Length: 402
Image (tube, rainbow, N blue to C red; front, side):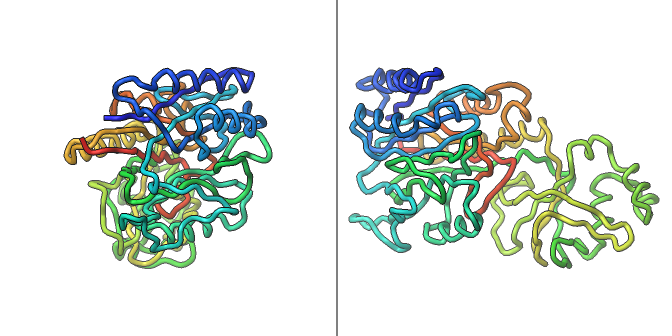
């Protein structure tokens, strides 16, 4: 096994922080189990170091001899077993990949055209790490367009965060605005999972009728009646047309945590073992209509889509993060793979505010999957597949067959 060398540090001086992180990378060179060289670097900075991004990247390129670095700025950043929040910090990881295994892209350097092959016949654009600026117009459409150029539409990444403007992105050089990142060929073995920190109230339903953002019926029944049944509201109360009566009948704990709706295409194959939520895009429930028995969601559902009512809280978030770790661990063991390194992009609303303490979220990843090299950041929105998410964690692992 050859793990990617990595390092992380916090210090108010950009040069000292970078040197401390570099010392960890350099100290692992030549050690058993670590890569001897590298040709692609990952860098994540908190806002305190973001103004010095150009100097930091120049130093990294000079010291490592690696010109291709990719990354961005986050209000908080991730390293193995630790989250840096509200302090000047840096996280680095140096990967050793096939020469044709990746291509850095940005607005000035587009990714390979769809269908492009490497010299050995591998698909040149099999997956992509994507960083995006939050002010970019039509961001969802740009992500979907990029996904159409990547085989299997396997995108992972997130929207830059942090109290600086502009928020720097790194794609061989420092830039801002739009999308940037790195495209991976099929020569690079990757595994990805999405955790949305949700717990289903009951089973899933099929959307029978809808209009705009209104779900009118589920499984042939009025949508509001189905939701109230999933919430455990007694049948005698469910028929009420009085909104206040219905709200009083709903479980207070569920209302405090918020009611959400997971939506999945009825045409897409199911990949999750339960609603939990690998298949689902989770959106907020924004209103109910007691007279017409409708529910309104912050999305545009379609007839035939699958829907599940759910809630998000610390217990659900812990359970769903455990789920993706269990799935990944089983897949690694079944296929005889080991982890070389990982990238984790989580939502700003997660971390200690959801899990209760600093570093608890990434600490759980470490306890379940081992002490593997990990970098990442907390984003303004997360990218997975061809979708923009919120309140989500996206874990991607670089693996190799043992």
